[in-house]
Length: 400
Image 1 (cartoon, helix red, strand yellow):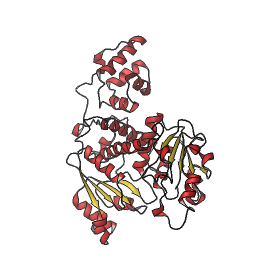
Image 2 (tube, rainbow, N blue to C red; image 1 turned 90 degrees about the vertical axis):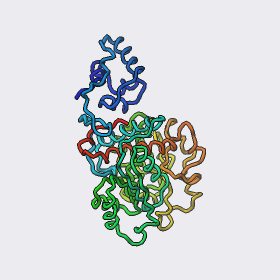
Image 3 (tube, rainbow, N blue to C red; image 1 turned 30 degrees about the vertical axis):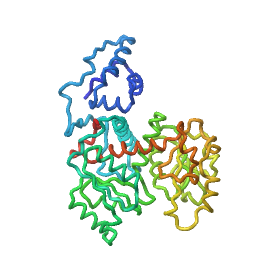
Image 4 (tube, rainbow, N blue to C red; image 1 turned 180 degrees about the vertical axis):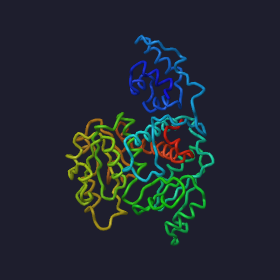
C-alpha cells in the first residue's frame, strides 16, 4: 500500500536520503513515515512544499495526511506494509541474518535512538509482557542496557542472579529451561560462558531468546549497536574499511562484527599479535595484520577490543606494558588511519592497555559513549520485534 509521503517522494522523483536531507531528519525516520507510522511535522511539510514549488510539482498540505483507513496493529504498532521483513523466532547470532534483515533492525533502532533523546521516551508496547535477563557471566553494561530497553518499552523485567540461583547448585541448562517455561516469559536474554549454550536453551523454551554473548562465539546486539553508531556518523556501511584491533582470538564481539560488516559490504581488517589471532582467520574474508601502523593505514573505523585475560589459559602476551607499546591505540598509531576515522571500543576499556586515555576521550573522534547509548536503542528494537504476538506483524516496523 502506497502511503502519502511515498507518493509525494515519487512525484518529486527523489530518493529517501534526499527527502530526509530536505526535511532535516534521518533516512530511517523517512522510512518509518513512508511505512505509515509517523506523519511529518509542519516545518517538514513546508520544506517539501517549497521544493515542490521550485520543481513545478503541484502539492498541497492534504497530500501529506495519512488516511483514517491506514491499518494499525495492537498497542499502536502499524500493521505490516510488506517493505520490511524479519522472520526469526530468536536472535542468536548475526551470521544467519540477511542484509535486509540487518538494515531493518538498524532502521528501527535508529528510530528508537531518536525517541530516547526526547522527554517522552517511555512506551507501552510491551505492557503485560515479561523479559528475563539470565546472565551466567557477570555483566553490568549489557544487562543494564537490556533492562533499560525492556522498561522503556513497558515490559516487566526480571534479573536472575545466577551466582545465587539453583543453577550454581548443579541445575543443568535443560532444567533451567523447564523452570523458565513455567514462568511464561515472553523474552529471555541469555549470556553464557560456553559457545552454543544459548542455542541449546532456545530449543527448549517457549519464548523468544536473545543471545547476550555466548563464550567466544557471538554477541549480536553488540555488532548491531556498533553498526548503528557507524552508520549514524558515516551514513552507510558499504565500502568502509574497518580495523578490529586486539584480542580477536577470544572476542565474540569481533566475530559478530566481522559477519555483520562483511554482510553489509564493508572491508574488515584484524590487527593483533599472532598469539591473539585464531588460525584460519583469512578464511572469513578478512585482511590480517600483525603491525598496527600498517593495519590502520587508510581505515575509516578503528575498533579496539578488550584484552580478555579471564578467557586466556596461558601467556598470550609478554606483558601489559609491551602489549600497549605495540598494539595499544595512541595518537601516533592513529595518525596512520584516515583523519576522520572513528574510535570505538565495546567496553569495558582497559585504559593504558588497549587504548590511551586521551584517545578514548577525544570528543571529536571517539564514539565510545555513543555506543552505549545506541545499545539501548538496538535492544529496544530487538525486544520489540521478537515479542510481537502476531508473528506476521514482524514484517514491518513499529512506531515508537
